[in-house]
Amino acid sequence: MGYCYLMRLGHLIILSLITCSCFDKQSEPEDSDIFLPSRQLAELTDKKLEEVSGLAASFVNPGYLWTHNDSGNPATVYLVNEQLEIRLACTLQGVDNRDWEDIAVGPGPEANKTYIYVADIGDNNANHSEKYIYRFEEPVLNEQTAEVTITEFEKIVFTLEGPKKDTETILVHPKTKDVYVVSKREKPVYVYRLSAPLATNDTLVAAQVMSLPLTQIVSGGFSPDGQEIIMKNYENIYYWNIRGASVADGLSSKPKALPYTEEPQGEAMTFNIDGSGFYTLSEKIKGEKTFLYFYQRRNN
Image 1: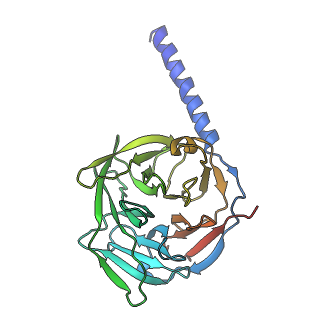
Image 2: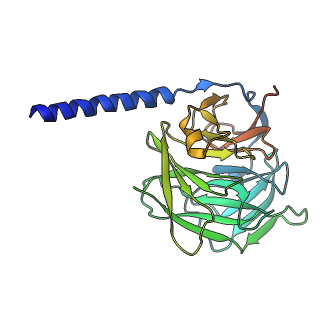
Image 3: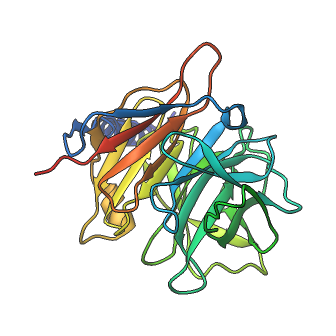
């Protein structure tokens, strides 16, 4: 080996060590008491909800939550109350649940309306070139109706910039309407953006925005004002206050670690509609109890 080659190799090794050191340092967030420890609201007992993989607060039905199951289950979104009782089941006509992994409620094509975004974006083995988001106007609970078929919805087809990846998290910005997707399995994970408006007549490319020195990210969400972000993996909940910054710049700062009651397989989380707290919910695991938890914002 030549001297120049060895020098270049040495520089690469040093750069790698510095990069890893920064990642390690940033991936150890400081604990925060912005939110109180969890409050247990209800045990999950309904067998229709045993593989819950997403959670979103309803805006047109205050106090209720939208949820769904993951791959292989019906293409149905359920509206539940805080006791985890199903009040409305909405099935998307002609749609397969390939691997539904997350759900969000946010703005969409028409002003003064809220829309449900169902993310068929899971891909454990990174086999799929295309990912899908199904968007439809948020249904209003009718006490006389327990089941409805959704026939009017948009199918947003997209690919990730770069290699195929497993993704389980979407965040819909409540102001810009941009949609963010976060990869799961590697470290660091990658954040991608679909810029609004989202075309439905072509295959979109989600632009890679940045990486985060985290791993196994399975859910996330914006606060209702778009100024805060939460994400979770199976062991931690991460929090960013991005006030006065872009999403990318805000996420570049070191996150806080929020209180978290570890769940059997917790893959669902959402802010409530006034930003005063957030919910988490887990899949059912045989032999373990699963609960809906609420984390109240601490009053200063």
